[in-house]
Image 1 (cartoon, rainbow, N blue to C red):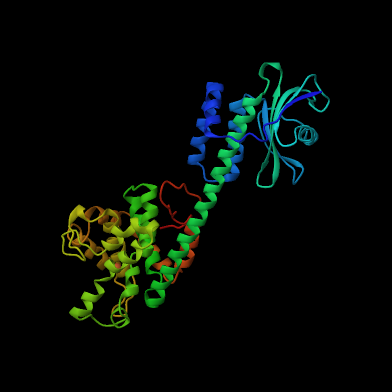
Image 2 (spheres, rainbow, N blue to C red):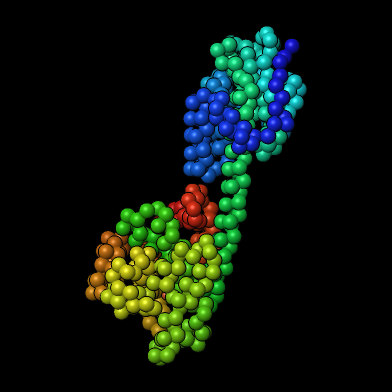
Amino acid sequence: MNTTVDFLNTAVSPSECVRLANAANDAAWDALERFLQQLRGGRHARDQYSEALAAIREATGASFVFLYSKHIDGVLEVDGTIKAPTTWYREFSRTVAACLGEGGVWQPEEPTRVGTISGVGSVESAVFLPVEAPRPAYLIAVGLGEDRRLQASDFRAMRVIWRLQLAHEQHLHLYDKLRETLFGIVRCLSAAIEAKDPLTSGHSERVARIATRLGKEMKLARGEISDLYLAGLLHDVGKIGIRDDVLLKPGPLSPSEAAHMREHPALGERIIESVSRLAYLCPAIRGHHERIDGRGYPDGLAGEAIPLMARILAVADSCDAMMSDRRYRSALPREKIEAIFWDGAGSAWDARVVEAFFTCRNELYEVCSRGLGQSVYMAVERAAGGDQSHAGRPAFRVPTGAKV
Ligand SMILES: [Fe+2]
């Protein structure tokens, strides 16, 4: 005969958590704390199942914990060094599920055939919780031997950990939706820039790649490099607001036309600040035509008053502009480009960024020759395709394998 405890109708409320805190031992709460830290740092729900099982085993002191799928009628994950035969998991899961219904503690008064693992021993106690993972499954913690009989508090600890796991999965799902939406916006804006001026197709993508390469050379943090990539893609978005007769004019611009063209950084800022999750990129977009000597636009900022991302974008933008054909001139030869950067270091551009340019210039020339005609669509797709942690604001990854 089995003694069962059913907690089906017992919700885990904050007051229960407090009671649990009072009842549980330090090891259980250490396990919970570690699991929370893992959730904060993790991205993949699939990995988190194994982390959740490990946390349950640690919190309850169970000999092993496993997740059994009703859908495929087989075990999905096992945490613990004990390995039982495949048929044992199936038979044990079915027996305990039939006995406990929708959750509880299984404590046979004497060893049973179904609870015996050949060559290992007999199950003295088990905690059982039906879950969705994502299809119906059983979460079962198993205690072998008399020294650690699983009990009611272990059931609650297991349920708390699993609910944390579910909440984390929901968070990841929402984050993925948000990321999709943001990349949809970036794709729209990138497409709009290219549609406006097809002759400079690929410029934004190349600037993004050059800027990230410069950022790496300057040993910026991974997050800053990712921000640079996105800022590069969007740096000229304000050109959407420039009149076609000015933007597409093949010859030199008149003073009034040049003044209108110089409005594009501020126009870009206005467009991007309306997307709250991208608004942190505004200083880089507004400042990408500032000069280190204060003679740039739109604000005439000088030195370090210009945001670092804007100073890097300025070099990347000039680099691609000089290396590419324009309506009114052909691409400049390398010697000429290097002479211009050499002369402008410390006046037009930040000398530290120009130094980074000279260190990796051979790779940058390759970006420009390879990048011509590449679609911004593809670049954004690749950027959206990787894993990254989400630390308070969207992070965008530089495309894997992109030799920038
Ligand atoms: Fe620009």
